Image 1 (cartoon, rainbow, N blue to C red):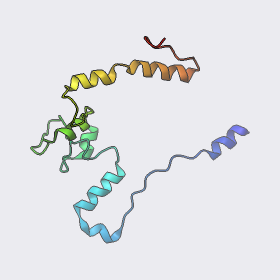
Image 2: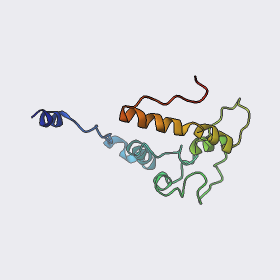
Image 3: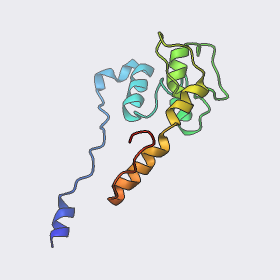
Length: 133
């Protein structure tokens, strides 16, 4: 009985609603682009390295329009935007490091995080890390 009551009170997360304002429909492509950005938050110019003309859905689904895809454009020359899209951001005042160094440092302790998540999920105490005793 309690289980049914608990299931009845669970709600699905609210889906983002796309707001349509009739007075803005005549604005054409700009309004359509904004609608698409709102409806598909996982896509956008960040994924395409700042290229506003790229097909963001194709970049998200197939990678063709994404940074490093087969459809590079001349205006994809802002290094900070490209690095952000690829996940290898660097602050402008930082020492220059290669993408390989950045990714190696990022992934260095990833297995620790996965093991700790599995331990906590199963109720086990966390393993001590090397050098922390």
